[in-house]
Image (tube, rainbow, N blue to C red):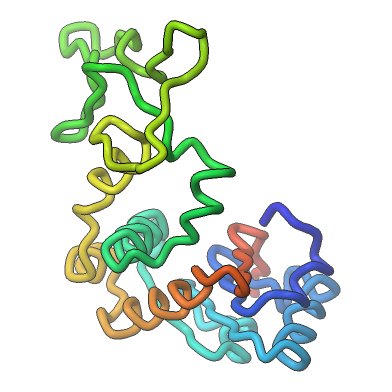
Length: 203
């Protein structure tokens, strides 16, 4: 979450992961209820526990403790696979079009430059390809296999719905429903906010 709590009232979808905002942040959670009441927003909670946040959610998806990154990896793969991306935003506000250096790779759990004997990396192949003008080389079409967009797409392709369900324990149908809700916000007139790891309450 990088925006102010009050901005949540403008969201079409609120995703809470790794926290229980209804109890840990009741003043901030007010804006989630505002979004639901006045903006017809959906609330999705992905959490190992059925919390008070989950109790008022439109969709609750359980998962095993410590598997949230695999869950999000599956969401990323779903969005790539179904082309549910706000392409203009991605091109203008991320490094998606930037070309990585020749020789950069990720295979079998290791990035390029790994020295098994030293158990450390030579990072010379990491980073962006620089042009003669001193600026990063880009591919506005996002088709070059060395552009960040394609590297990301390839990296997360391993997180299929079946694999995510196996790792996280989340039923495949619930995982896919979360993905569908998120995919709907790829449209230019839709917004989503993620409240991630905002603290717990213990009982």
